Amino acid sequence: MNAIPLTLLDTPNPSATSPAASRHAKREADKLGKRLRHQVGKAIADFGMIEEGDKVMVCLSGGKDSYTLLDVLLQLQKKAPVRFSITAVNLDQKQPGFPEHILPEYLASIGVDYHIIEQDTYSVVSRVIPEGKTMCSLCSRLRRGALYTYAEAHGFTKIALGHHRDDLVNTFFLNLFFHAKISGMPPKLLSDDGKHVVIRPLAYVAEADIEAYAAHKGFPIIPCNLCGSQENLQRAQVKKMLRQWERETPGRIETISRALADIRPSQLSDGKLFDFLALGSRSDALPDAHAWLAGGDKPQA
Ligand code: SF4
Image (cartoon, rainbow, N blue to C red; front, side, top):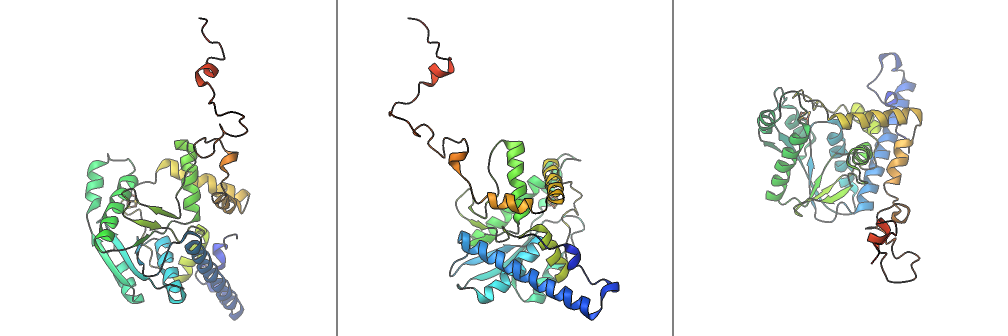
């Protein structure tokens, strides 16, 4: 399903506030909200993300993605077939200029259980990374560490992150172009130490829809560039490429996203996933790799 054009749901345009225009905007907003709930519900069901009794920690950065995630999960929680709790957790990394009152005020206003962890990872990152280099990778690692530690200490059974469909596709191409592997950002995963189940309920949601939804809801967005760090160049390149593809061929990102859920190992070349050696073989003997490598020219005895 293609994402909704942002302009349809943008903050009211003074020249278009006629009753008919307002009704249209409301209808579009309702449709978008319904689509997001449907896509998030489907991802939760498809990947078994949430089960009875789960304690879900929603990581909230103050960006449009995590606000949307929290908002939609809270709506689904009311009608979900299982009971689960939601706690919003933000890590205040002490970046200069971080408006620390915004999230507590917003979270208190919607009445959700929340906690703000305060940890000065910013000083660590700015000390370790040379000036002018991107800090995001170390910053994210430290953030993840702090959030996982908190989740373990407080018995959360699921950690929900706000990555969306376009992030998943983006990561796939980053790995393809720069790391020579077919791998991405899965909707559900076990952390490397085996202690945490991480879920990405926005895995089917288009970034453009999230932008429209966040604008419509008026979330108090906190930009993630207060520290002045530039985005990783490779990631920025891939994003630019995808945006251009989408402009030229609308719907392409959705097609790629669907392809990530329809892998055919026998049509690729990874012998670890598909036993090409056994395919059509008439004997159990393995090919003589050395002889084949030598072009069949075995040294004469
Ligand atoms: S922009 Fe700044 S705060 Fe955001 S991830 Fe990068 S280094 Fe961290």
